[in-house]
Length: 257
Image (cartoon, rainbow, N blue to C red; front, side, top):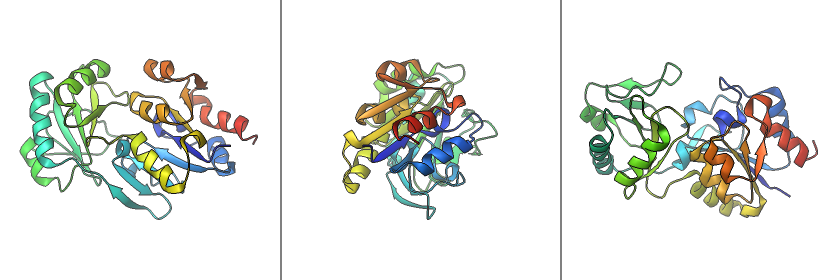
């Protein structure tokens, strides 16, 4: 039987607007398995969901204890690599803007307009000021106006893939850039190893390309009904969409809740 449930948040566990439904919360509370949130979001976006246990944040760069509200591990991108990657992307992606996630906040140059009001961020006058103020970088963000994320990801991987890991979670023209070797799956695998849980005892849910590493590693994987075409293609199992509490429906059936 499954010992661990690994689930993405936006577009997967949560309904539109970031809502955790009563049905989904009840299913998570009822299962006899560890529940691990695996998200591109930083800890400050998950701490108010009233979940317990562990969250893998920033696409694997951070481990967050939901119960005690503390970061227990963080992997960073060296600042010299951040500068190098920013310069390389500027050469191959017209109009690209750069932002960095420090684990506490997002710092942006003026050309980065990939976030709306629902994603608080601080814009500085120059990209050099962003680099100067960032005490650490757990994730870089790159945004370009009117860019198509899949194509932009291909260009970025070719340009900087030897230095960092590049993915996206569906935002228009928005890329998520992590330390080399860091992914949701790599961090989840280490976490499961520490708990004595094998991948065949893990069930995973996701909807976007940044979930593919976890969905490919877990013994059982479900693409959401609203998932990106690449995710649906990669998974033989499909859950109902997040608007219909798809994760809860699958858990209710598998755990006979």
